[in-house]
Image (cartoon, rainbow, N blue to C red; front, top):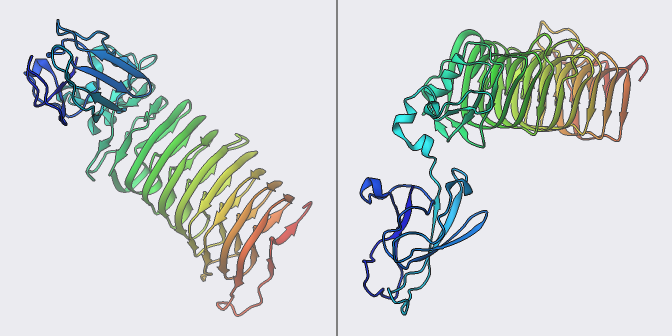
Length: 457
């Protein structure tokens, strides 16, 4: 247990009026100051020092003549990392003289991660007997994150912020089907550099049943050949990403996504309450959130996400998803802000190409879209929300604020080419400029909402 004491005081003497520095000491370390704590318990050392602690709850205790606290404060009353104000008022032994109240703030230490011994163990709490089911394994270091590979179907929780200091991290190669809970902590300055590899990210592959939640990833740099994302290169099966915040850059030859490279066959992905701020680049299939979703009737759901992404590529480029091949997908309250540049055929502020039925409600794109025709292009499809939809699509309560510049053929403020569905309560603001100098031909289909409407629209 840790205790609060006061520097500059002495045992039994009259307390002088004035300010007193407050420090944290631990008796087992001979009174040596510690960097963080806020537990008041055990022997208090000097009598008659009233101390009030305020955090999520207000507690009060007095150091008695027998050098014990009148009401010991249990450590479980506070969470690791919680900031707590300690108000100390010094009194003389007879209680006749008091000093002004001195306030200092402390952060309760994370005993599990603060122990140097625990950082070198398989997991920080391994000696406490976690089972990875009801009690997750605690991760406090880069090596412990890598050790997820030993139990890929278990639960894990971050115990503190972890700084990789831009050291290269080897992707976790065993397919992951467990749960990674960041508990609000960060992974900082992580680098994954596998320029010739397929499926590159913190996890190479995530499979059905996995959850990644409550985690922050800051300044990540992830590079690979194909299927590249900060969390995973390849997600296969039912899974959940919730309350994840990511910043960084992703580069690939093919299939680069801010969070996920490829949502592969049978991927029933749900991504909610997440925020991504990334630069993404690939030749083909580039998306601020996911490069390519390829599944059949799995009803992917994106809900309440913010994607701040600069995205560049050739074909299949989107602010959120490059190519969406998933029947009955839903994109709700998901917003993209950033600039998009491309040389290819299917480009959209949210989705480059949607091949099957999709519902989009409360989606938006804010930022420029610039697409240049090259010699190998076929028909170009560029839209503020979706480049081309090839099946029944519902768009509602959505908007675009963008300056769109492109070489023909299908250009629309919301959708370049629309193969059936409906658009309601949605709007576009900005400019739409179409240049076709390469072929010196007349651009075919340009519209403020949609460049071209097909079938039952």
